[in-house]
Image (cartoon, rainbow over all chains, first blue to last red; front, side):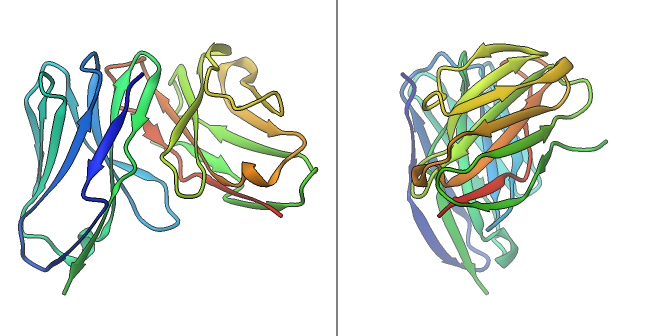
Length: 110
Length: 114
């Protein structure tokens, strides 16, 4: 049974800092690893998807890496902005659909 | 291109009543998924449709939950009778192919049972 863990649960940083969110998963038999963003009262916005054969994906100030052998993924956010404040979720796609972590609640202070 | 659409966005019902949630996936997406997040917990898988067929319903909590996907288009999730512990946010997602493709999520339906 796949289990996904995210650390830290919450993070508060001043604007401009670079930060790393961590995600670990127990079953390496995944199709891909997705990072989502959720704003309060809103749905899930897909940020990055890393296929199991890939090592990383980049979109703007976001970079996600995947190490299947160690069961880890990281989301790197460069030069954080107040608009980045949200909950970030990682999800591992297996045979049974997505297994989500509990999320990291990020607050970027202006 | 329209995204995944869910109705209603919010629903407040009394314990024992029936509620039906609806999901319209992205046109052409054969795969449709239901997930839910109850208070303080992770988002959990409920079930998966491929077109009109239930591919996997192992995440459905009990027989008070019934999901259908008529004609392989939109899907409904009915809760009957609703209990207090059913409160949470119900998400629908769709994808073109199972597994490797990106899953697109709707905005969710926030269900409150009082």
